[in-house]
Amino acid sequence: MMQILKLLAVLVYVLGMTWAADWCYKSQVSHNICKGPDEWKDIVPTCGSKNQSPVNIETKRVVINNLTPFSFQGYQHTFHSVITNNGHTVKVNVSDEAVISNAGLVGNYKAVEVHFHWGKNGGPGSEHTIDEEQYPMEMHIVHIKDKYNSVQEATKDPNGLAVLGFLYQESDTEDKKYGSIINALNIIKFPGNQTQLDSLSLAMLIPPLHNLTRYFRYKGSLTTPDCAEVVIWTVFENTIKLSKEQLKTFSSVWFKNGTALTETFRPVQPLNDRVIFYSGSHVASVSTALVISMLIITFYTV
Ligand SMILES: *[C@@H]1O[C@H](CO)[C@@H](O)[C@H](O)[C@H]1NC(C)=O
Ligand SMILES: *[C@@H]1O[C@H](CO)[C@@H](O)[C@H](O)[C@H]1NC(C)=O
Ligand SMILES: *[C@@H]1O[C@H](CO)[C@@H](O)[C@H](O)[C@H]1NC(C)=O
Ligand SMILES: *[C@@H]1O[C@H](CO)[C@@H](O)[C@H](O)[C@H]1NC(C)=O
Ligand SMILES: [Zn+2]
Image 1 (spheres, rainbow, N blue to C red):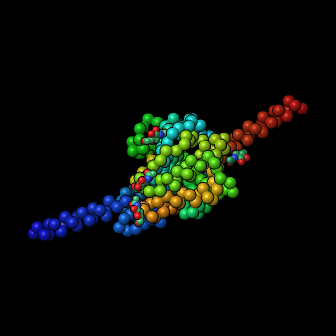
Image 2 (cartoon, rainbow, N blue to C red):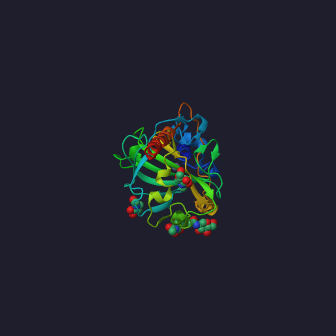
């Protein structure tokens, strides 16, 4: 009898271990250690739900909407941060003085974290795709509604998070402003490693703010378990340019001792009934205003 009980206890324990298995990306799947994207829904049912991210953005089907530009506050403010390899990604903690508003958002959202998704040696690695094209990398600047104190708290609100997604493209020249992050990647090779960065502002990591008026918008989820459907997504049309060498360096961090952390993206999820909006009509109204003012100027000059 005792024997059977012991056996049962062992069985329950082993099953419990299986249920508690950690999640990982497809390139790291190893069945007794971690579950890949297709199995995330077995860890957290929400990952199999209807409004998941990322998605493919089909530009022919976007709905042009009167979405105004963002107001960026504190994006120029420099701060000291720590960069961490957490075994799933590389993340940078940021100053909550960086706040976004307007752009169809209700109220203010403060920045809490920056992290990256990348490929293998500079190959395809973005989460969102545009007309099925996958870019080499994608950065997420995660913001939460300013009344909340943590991402956990914000995920209880269906509009609790606003994530800004930036796509990268390969360029012939390196972006020196990324030097501090790229150099740190060699120091944080092992999961759990972290190091301090030189002072940094969010504006240093993204295209000029005036170049961010064109963007895609839809309602979706976190792209990692627990996949909570609480994110107002923005994906900017303008890309960030890094050299091949810089893009490749992201693949040098490790998932576990000796195994590179590569292809850290979730595959695109079905759009289902959702609509993707595009901030096009505002751009049109800006040029209309420009034409009108030019006509007036011409009129007065004549
Ligand atoms: C990031 O975290 C480190 C260590 O926890 C802390 O010293 C630093 O002030 C934080 N930086 C910001 C910008 O919050
Ligand atoms: C990185 O982590 C490894 C393994 O945990 C440890 O041996 C090493 O000292 C850490 N390095 C730094 C820079 O923290
Ligand atoms: C910013 O926009 C201007 C005008 O549209 C364009 O010429 C320039 O290349 C853009 N800069 C970047 C870094 O995308
Ligand atoms: C990583 O693996 C190597 C060789 O297998 C071993 O010598 C080293 O101690 C390991 N390092 C850590 C931090 O586990
Ligand atoms: Zn992300």
